Image (tube, rainbow, N blue to C red; front, side, top):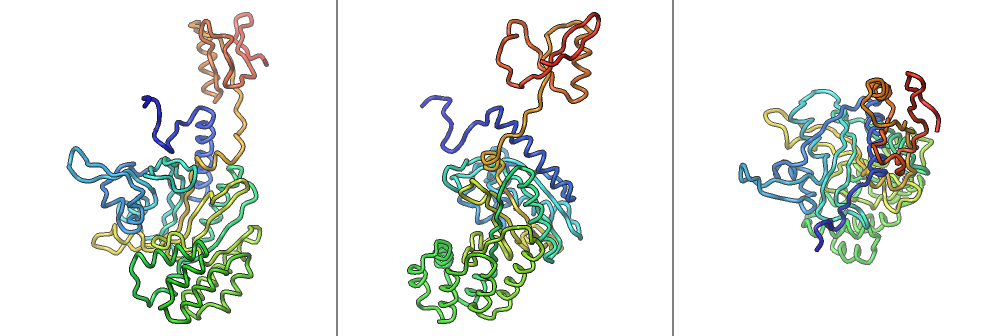
Length: 386
């Protein structure tokens, strides 16, 4: 095999795409900052116990593992930044009130999480800790929509679900982890036959409710239908009420619902959302509430904090939106004459991109689309339009 061949689902990012990704990264982090979110940068490598603690255990199969040559301990390359940010909130910042954090950095997956996806996503996300109320859910969803909007995403649709619905129906049943996983898979794929086989020994009301969930998808009318069909469980009633509250406070947003969708059931604890955009075959952003995620990182005090957040892959986003206009540059001759060097330095200090044409390369392709050139007129260096 050639030395330059990269592993499957791993790719270099070339200049034009890298520029677009970096510009989007800055825009989205600046949008998060405008909401009051503080930037953190967790390490790519951690002890495996920390990476897979609490909700991180669901990431076990997605995590590359290796042995630390210094300590002999098992370490992992992060597959998701969210548990690390929860650790920072619970163990390092240790604040009593609301904390808003954002991040952007690479994660590594042992296998792609969707068809044609990279195994090295550039994950950007935001999390808000310390507030139990729906105000936090509304804020994080609004921030998510604003981030996608400033990236140039069009025709957005928010799909809502709630982890409490299926969890409440299964709460009283003694199920193995494997069977629970099969039930969630049958619900997600809307496989009524498989679901019937899996639930044939269940109480009739639970079996019927799970079967009804398969058809509870569509527009906002689903919420009223669910209220009529599903058992009068307090957690289910609260979930439906909170979804109704959320859509009433975002009247400009197009919502859909799939109450059988319980992806991330081992992770999310309440409302969860996925945002779809024109031209995307899968969700471009996912998020929701995951209360209690920081409890495992506390010591003497209880750090079981309410939490809600979202994440996206900037590499996926950049492939779905038009490239941002390239800022035009200035072409300058190469030289050591003090006046020329001073003129170039002054332009760069003002934020201009100045590309010096090295000797013998004056006619090469202009990758920066220079629209001006620096020329000498009398004893001055002046800009001239090209």
